[in-house]
Image 1 (cartoon, helix red, strand yellow):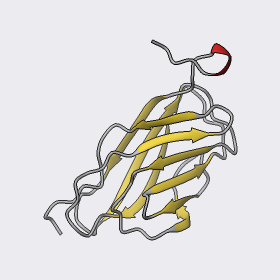
Image 2: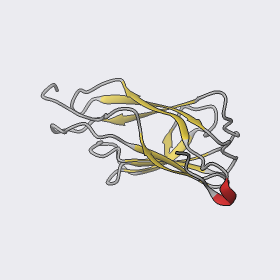
Image 3: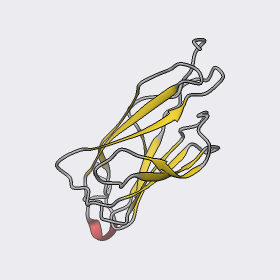
Length: 142
């Protein structure tokens, strides 16, 4: 059935929450690409949080460079929890998916891939949901 939010309206959700990576080489540079589409518009100043990106060698960074048309040029990165917090700078509508890319350092040791979750907070909060695929797994290659 449909999950209802406040006042009986359907709760906001992610229509699309896809993640992909460019490399699985231990300690290698890896571009992570997130494609998101909300069921309810997400407003300027609202936050989108991706968690569970654990194992990365990328140090904490309050202004990790981000490539995106709707999140400005950076996001807040916390290494130990693998959390990326992005602040929306341009309204995210419900018809065109938004694409976000970040560059991180892969784990330096063998690690099973992890499946990140994505959520939002603000005018139309979206509860955490698992993204499309596990990433940041590193095998014997180096």
